[in-house]
Length: 273
Image (cartoon, rainbow, N blue to C red; front, side, top):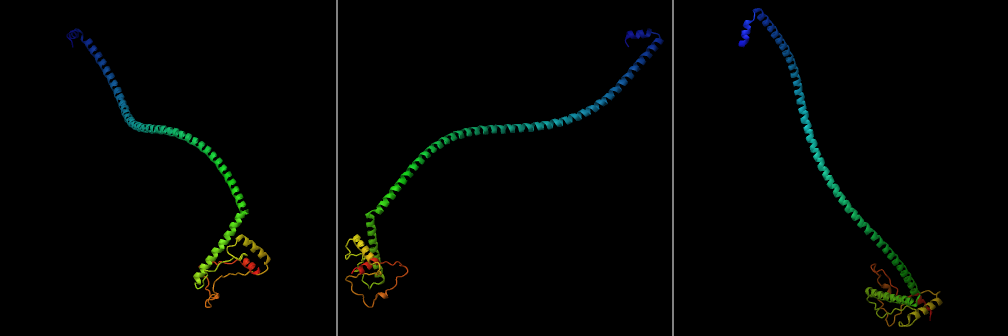
């Protein structure tokens, strides 16, 4: 206590001091009770706050886990976004390349179309030329056929046929002579001269005239049988030991048989005397 308060306390009567002390004590007890009640309320609030704090800590932990998961998802999403951006950039590049290729293709298409138009024009020109050439070919064939027909109807063609006939006969006789010399060397056929019996006496006579006379004699003596005759001029008789009937047959390797006389001409010649 302060000195002033101590002096005042000493001057007060005992009853007032007791009453004052009692009142002060009651007031202090009331304050203590109030403080105890407040303390109990605070403890209850502290317990509630502690429970709420634990719940909050749990929620904070859950929220932290959710935040970590969300962060992981965000990172994955960011990686996916970056990948999508890269793919989009690649697609843009590919799209640009495709556009450039399309433009180049359009240019080439225009060039090809122009070439096709030119080729079609050239094809039309070539078709016209082909038609002209075909027409010329048809006209040339017609002229050639007409020339062939005219040549067949000419006397020159008949003369050529007659010459070919005589030449074929002579070649056939020479072939026959070689075969006879091969298989019958004892026979001397070098002096045998072929005669077609066309109605002339010498081999140097005119062949067309002989053919005409032969045709006339054939018409006169058509009823008589034809006989093949070979005129041998200046040839001695064959020796008896080598008769014609004993000639060896022609082997199978040389089958062609060559005629040396004209049967119709021979018939005309035999009937003429």
